[in-house]
Length: 199
Image (cartoon, rainbow, N blue to C red; front, side, top):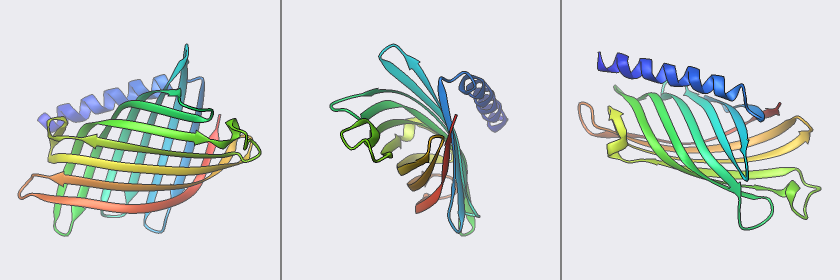
C-alpha cells in the first residue's frame, strides 16, 4: 500500500514535470547506448533573469542489473570565466536493482552539483565541444524503500557536428547501498556513445 502511494506520487510529479518541460525555452533529447545498456534523457532549460533552471527526466536500463528513472532540477549560472556553468539542485531516482539472487527497490532524493565547460563560448570557439559532469549524493534520511544510500557520478563530452545535433560520449558511475533482507550494494561503472538533438 505504501509502495503504491509512492508510485502514484512519482507518476504525478513525472506528469507535472513533463508538462513543464514542454514550456522550456530550449530543450534537448539524448539517446546513448553500449553493448549491455541503454541511457536516455530529455532536458529543458528555462531562462529566469540572470540564472536558468535546468530540468530533466532520464532513464537507464542495464539488461538484468538495474532499471532507474531519474528526475533532475537545478539552478545554474555562468561562473568564474566564460564558458563555464555551475549548478546546484536535486535529483531523484526510482527503480530496481539486482545482484545474483537478491533484488531491491530504489527510491531516493539526492543533492546534485553540476559543472559544464562550453568551448564554443571561449576563445576556442571554432571547437563546438562541451564537457560536463555532475555528482549526486543521497544520504540515508533521503533514501526510502530498500535504499539506504545512493551515489552517482556522471560525465559527458558532446561534439556539435550539426546546428541541432551532437555526437555524445557519456559515463556513469553508480553505487547503491540496500538494507532489505541483508545489507548489500550494487555498483557499476559504464560508458556510452550516442546522439543529442537540440530543439
